[in-house]
Length: 327
Image (cartoon, rainbow, N blue to C red; front, side, top):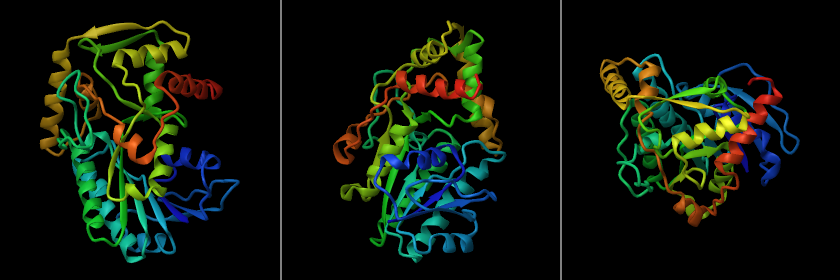
């Protein structure tokens, strides 16, 4: 089984390659990349890098040739223009699936996001895959639009697809945006809007990778959507305090009015309507929302078994950072 991996080098794709030895081998791996990077060294399988772009149909046609399965992990989270969300997350996905269909690719595992489904109605509500999708920002809407593209190709009966929706994932190799959070906690204080006891489903990256391998090989997974998170659902405060404990630090919670977060949420929506993206109000605006998801379907149908809980996961993450003297 030959694999095409989109979105390399990236957080998920890099870790996926690092952990290959723990799973059944592929016959070969091709990494679609925009950058002139050397192929990573993997003991168990040959890996090649192929220059291409989700918006370049010719490069996608060449990249998907002689490939059996695709892990579509490429996407964009933060942008300069709102339109870029849809250009990459929706239209780029369509271009890729067109090339896959043309070249007879058997299955595509598409990495979406919990943002495609949206937030919980409130504390105590846990979302399942059967709940309606109500994305509340352009990132979430673009990922949902990407999902709809994937389903359209599934309906042709000529290609199998599996949609994976992780919640915010964490773990090595840690990106700079998470390093910033860790360094803030390292200072000994952390701002929280409102009570901070909002549920926060999170996904340790190795748990996510386990689910991806299962999605490639499970017959029942074809045409399905699976939410993938850790089994426990901590609160925002529990996540912050767990990170602080892993650092051997005490953290003082600075409580700010929840109205400030709600004002940022409104500002984010106003800017989005104008085609403008600003990361700060976007992130702050989501900070008071409940994000809780069930993994029951993935456990039952895929055999998903998340072996790392958030306490161990963050301990491993911070150890990785310490080894590299990042924090």
